Length: 413
Image 1: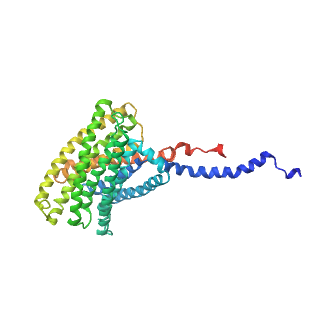
Image 2: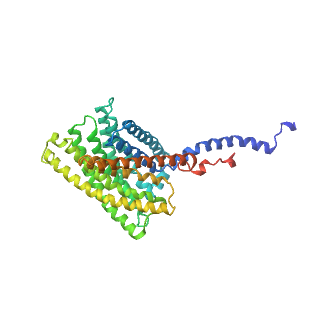
Image 3: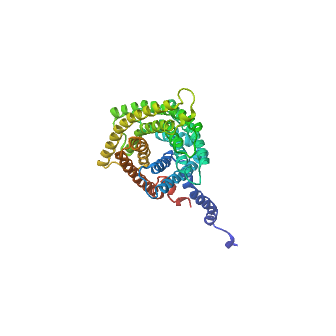
């Protein structure tokens, strides 16, 4: 009889077994849930960078064996990462909506980096028109896909910018002390819509003037919003530099974001005017007094001049940013963070508009062709270095999964 009676200790152990199993199952689920719950929108900058490298590789003045293959690989990388990151971001907003809105809405950088989501989509639309529609198996049907993608992206980035800046206005989050270059991102987003639209209507297979002209008109409207808003933001941030000094060392690479508005602005001016003039959109449309061939020629000249002015300001911003980053490196204060990803996309647009689309082509300048190739090589190396650090941080660090979610919870077993 006594053998059939269990001691209180053994009975508690048996009762604890299913509980331990439940904790073990919960522990195994927790890393993915933790990654989703804390997933930041900064990851979409990786998609943007892959997209701009794909465009630059495709349009590089110097052709080499495997150029289109590498461009296609970069484009597919953009698409695949966008799908993965969109799943994480959508899951965060769906399952952790309250904490996500509180976290993003209370952090200036996270709030501004939400513009990277539609910007990444816009790079896919441009890549679809440039890379996919020109393939032998694709053709005009993929031009229609790229065209539809662009209109969705243009509306998306416009609404995102309104939400971001309205949130900043209502919550009074911003001061000179915490002003950051990330403030430029929503303004860069609408300018990106203009530049990617210009790329899409210039190079998509079989596109017609009927499709080109609406994108040109809306593109200039979006460019006006992005450029003039950026002028205000430049004033705020330069005042912050004069009164508060540079940003923290770990955020120093984000200074390259200051190139975004001028780079996208100059690119948009050139590709939109090129579509109107060189591609013959206005001449074929032939309506009214503005949509005419002679107006397109004047528009192209004016756009080239304005792009040179923006490029000049971009040179100043680039020098300031590189000197600040170099000083931080000299003091050994610079550590790798996800902010390093912000050094590629602004430089990519700045490269594309200067050397490739105007100076190397319209001026027939070998010097600008060499500069294009050299800067593209730098961007590719930068991308590979950032990718290596990111993969290491995701696998071995807490870049995606927080440290507390990685530790085995033996106390619960």
